[in-house]
Length: 118
Image 1 (tube, rainbow, N blue to C red):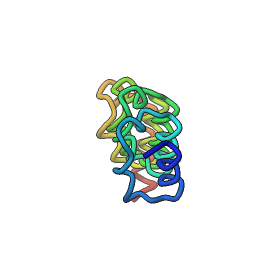
Image 2 (image 1 turned 60 degrees about the vertical axis):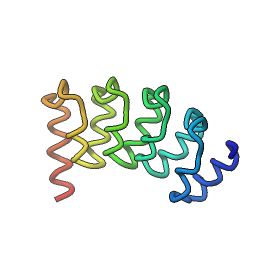
Image 3 (image 1 turned 135 degrees about the horizontal axis):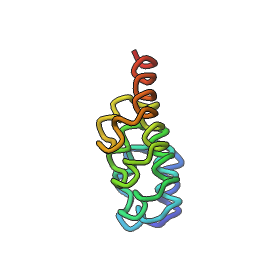
Image 4 (image 1 turned 90 degrees about the vertical axis):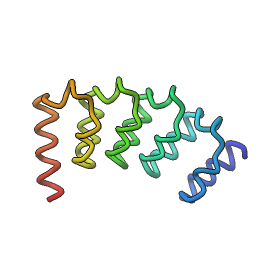
């Protein structure tokens, strides 16, 4: 499979075929970005380099807050990214770094998310 075919699978929304995309293509920023815009949980397949990419992780958590669990630990400490994840899914709080769990911005966002999803 080449990049063009992989992008077609993603852009056509063929989520059941995502696993067919070879590992080496998950090192390609364009492929990973397209995939996480479709479903943030596809961050799971991204290369170690790309799970450190702020742009990709931010897009991932916008579609699935729980994708924060697949982000690099350095981004699990990023207040902006973690707030986006928690806004999307209050359960994302469980996957952010303990270092920021008591941050007032995080706690406020978490409380608002819980209330919004109740």
